[in-house]
Length: 285
Ligand SMILES: C[S@@+](CC[C@H](N)C(=O)[O-])C[C@H]1O[C@@H](n2cnc3c(N)ncnc32)[C@H](O)[C@@H]1O
Image 1 (cartoon, protein in one colour):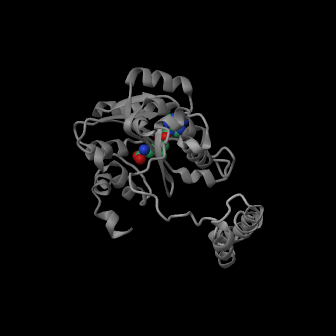
Image 2 (cartoon, protein in one colour):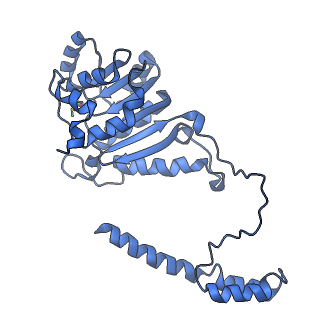
């Protein structure tokens, strides 16, 4: 165990929790990074997957007295933990009706953490059904996303894995670029960013920050800058041709021809892609 983990408050609280819990050692540094701003604030924190209750005590001690800690589990035994002051709901995270009832009762939530069954549908349902009910500034955190790569019990890797679903959300967030000319949906209107850690995915929710992006410029004069994006190949020849013809007659056939050949030639895409392919292959090692 890394000595820096041992120093973390959340790790110490985990060790001292009065009920049993088991976690992966790498999670505590992620918790500190994503949750430290919520400590001692009046937040509503929901954990799916209660088991013996060990993590519920850890969260209560970490977030402080003002936080309300709510647990959800499919196992009715979890109700036993209500005597310690936790609110416990019994139901399945992959059941849309359960979520509708839950949010009707609880209203908006600051943080939802999924440590439930870890199957694709369970993790995906948690995010899909919770997203409309997360407050601005809140988060949905899904643990054990490594199951997206496990065959046994989880039937992955698959097109329908949780990690693939999360990758789709990356695409959907980009709808906020006006260059894409796509309409926004409730994901692109609510999810500000997605953080990927090993086996944890974090969705940061903030509808105020999810506006359609817009190009802005300052008041200084645009002087000499020309984008050299397409100047990587044959730069010497291009500079020469530009000097001789480029600035003289913008409409000339010769200029257009040279630009086609030396600037946006489809061959350059092939050259680029060969280099990218090599990098992709190096990544697999
Ligand atoms: C890994 S344990 C939770 C551990 C606990 N968070 C801790 O750290 O001490 C997973 C729990 O998720 C519950 N669970 C499994 N499938 C579920 C589902 N579909 N809906 C709600 N809870 C589920 C299990 O009953 C089990 O108690």
